[in-house]
Length: 279
Image (tube, helix red, strand yellow):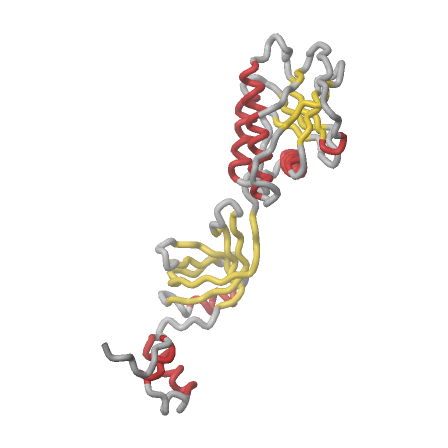
C-alpha cells in the first residue's frame, strides 16, 4: 500500500513531486486529543490506512469495477492543516466515495462483508485512543467520520410479498391475532394475522399443513426471515398425494399417450438408433 497521512498538529511537510489528479483526490485526517507526529505510532497509521484501502478494494471488486485491487497515492499535504491529499485511480475512487457515503449515513449494509470488517477495524483502532478518522474534500465524496462511539447499521430490512407453508399449531390473541407455524425445516415461527376474521378462518385449519400469503421482512445480511404478516390463506391441500396428482395429469393428457410405444419413445429421447450394428 502506498500512502501517507498528516495528523492534527503536524508541522509543514514538503510537497511530494507527483502529478495532480484533482478529480480523484480526497483527504484523510486523524484528529484527537494530543494527536501529533510525536505521539502517534507509524504502525497505527499503517493499520488504519490499510483497513480503509482494503474496504475500498473489496467494495470495488464487489461492484464489478476492478479485480486488481486499489492503490492510494500521496499527492499533497495542505500546509497548516490536519489533512493530507490521497489520490486513487478509477474505478477505485467511485468505490471510495461509496464507502464514504455509507459511513456518513451510518448504514454499512450496502457494503460487502469484508469492507464492513475493514471499517469496523478502524473503529476498534480509534475508540481506545479517542481519535477521529475523517474522509473529506473529495469531488462527489461526502465528509464522513468514524469515532469510537459511531453507531453503524450492518444489515437492512427488505420487505415484499411472499408465502409460507407450514403446520398450523396455534391461532389466537386480541386485539392483534397471531399464529404459530411449524416450518418444513423444523423451525417454529410466530406470524401476525391481518384481521380477526382471517384468524377465525385459520382457526378451522389447526394442525393442518397450510399455505399462507402475506408481507415478509428479511435481513439483507443473511436473508433470514424477520417478520411475516398473514393477509390470506392459500389453496395448499395437505391431503393431495402423488397418486392423485398423476391421475389429474393423466386426465389432462387424455388419449395423447395411447398410440406411443414407450420403448421407442425413450430410444428417441436418448438419440439411439433403431438397430445397433452387430459385433
